[in-house]
Image (tube, rainbow, N blue to C red; front, side):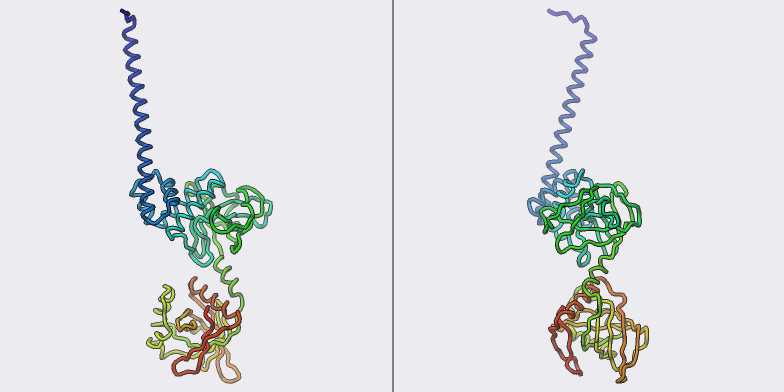
Length: 389
């Protein structure tokens, strides 16, 4: 029989061993619970993503990105497009390097595509999660930083990047779009390094554009804000000069029914030309001939006199008798021709972006070899409506 010579010390050691064993058990149990809860949340997020129409690959990516979120948060993200896009873009900005950021951006773009949320704000607008290389055109050997689009509107562009911004405010920079791995076409040119000097090259069908740095990135969002003139660049590329034509149409006053019809067109509703005849403004119409037109204005010939700064709606219709646009035109120049008629130069004012792009497409179609369709207005001669844009 052994004699315990140190009973007090032995009791302390046993108590410490018991506490250590309890601590280890607690750590193991907590870790197991965390992994179980994470796996459960990932499984729930995957099921929710599949229920919203995502593919198995995108559902797995969604579950991996938001595995720390509860089921309620995951459900809210799938039903809140703006919030989901912002969270995906921030996940891209938190990646440790260029390759990891591109991989996450490709997964995020695919996920948004499948949900139908990756739509351009205007024709030719940058898409969410699309990569761009930002560089200074005045310094060809300077840095080129890889950024990713967070949001875009007609004036501003918000991007994020895992890399710091090397430029001060108000710097005019060049934004060059880049292909995403596995999505779209590639140009065959490698992406410039985040701090490299390689000349970035845009994919086919995309164009680089100038952007002025308005706000530098601030943690933790890492958002850069640019101002751009991309809408004007696209529009001017489509219709840079006035196109000679001869289109017989009418104008309506700047009041009443034309305003309602114009709002319907801006909501992309179909409006037939015959609906104008039932409007109260139809009795105040003026028959005019458009002799040249651009996306910014037109030149009209008519028999009635017009006053400078007078405003009226110019009716432009397609060959199928549906209205294309009702731009508000302001008279900026008036003179009389040799036959006693009035020649008026008008400029389009208050034109929204979609309406402006419709006008640009219409002018571009007129610049091509004319394929015109004819129709007859009530109580008037046969009119040339212009080609289908």
